[in-house]
Image (cartoon, rainbow over all chains, first blue to last red; front, top):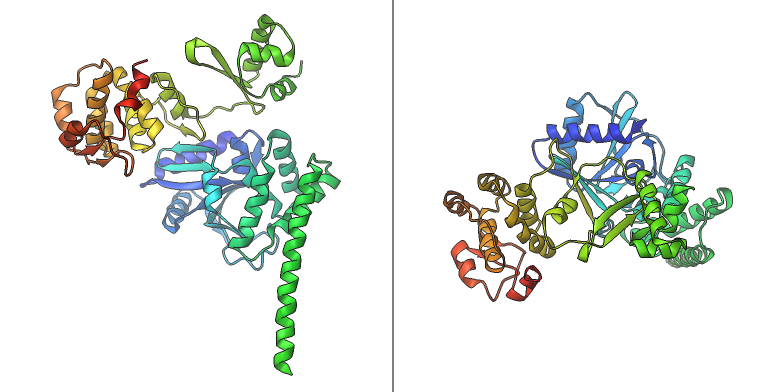
Length: 234
Length: 206
């Protein structure tokens, strides 16, 4: 596990080792630690918008004694369909997950970049911390039980703007193939039922309506394609 | 008393009066509460206009961080900024006023550059200013803004060697595509477009 102070020290070393300025975005547990919503994390998740920056950090981490790990742990829903998987750098029980533009099935959208709340400059390494709303949405796309606990912690510590979460889930659906509002509804429902999270009924109803609409739309499109296929066969 | 609960109750920007009103207590007790919250790490104090104490209360206890760029800028400048996105610098030493000024000019943000004008008054080491200006490639911009600041406030005299040296930097826009109507002589001399008109600088005359 990596504590907040250890994370800061690691970033400081990376920043000093890097020869050029690079910008990356901290997500997940790492970002939560910056907001004081978590004490330690299993891995530091960083998203890069440029491949060159990712390679530079990877090189630096290798020089610091981190090894690239090949085997993947199934974290996200529909992991198999993801084209881009993160670079995992491991040293003992410390792990860095480096993503390029995409976080498995989700994309680093312009909205997410605009909503960044904090920027931390460690010499040449500039780490931007994504907003709590975006961390929550990212947590909703995973299957791990501890992500639910993290989401609950976010709900308790922040006044999350549900409009941002819902809009971003719709935006992600536009950007990719996945129906994020459906995942979000599942996630919120489980949080409310299993962990007794305080989620407004109206939010659940809104997300459910959106999710149903999207599912219907998808089924209709599939239905039309099938009927077209049958006609052709005739 | 549970400090976390209290912090949640009064989260946000508060004054002694508003704190007293929310908690339904007297002003003197409100000051005591603020002290307790500060000790628990939930509260920081800033001073607003007319030296009114403004408390920033958050339910997330602050952890040790780097130096906040905006906190330093607000400390030195007369124009105080409300921050939307915090910027922390992790360094062994606290960034000096010269570095803050140069970083502010390099930020290309209107409010930040405007607030940075007040920092010229605090500069003690001109050669250090030039060193940072060279590092960030904003020498000419710093020189031009120095001349602009001189038109509205009393500023220490820049030494001539630094002034000449600043001319080696890159010119152009301080804020992309923003030009001035009033400082064209300065713009021409430094080869830089000033983003302010005279009305923008009224804030320094108050």
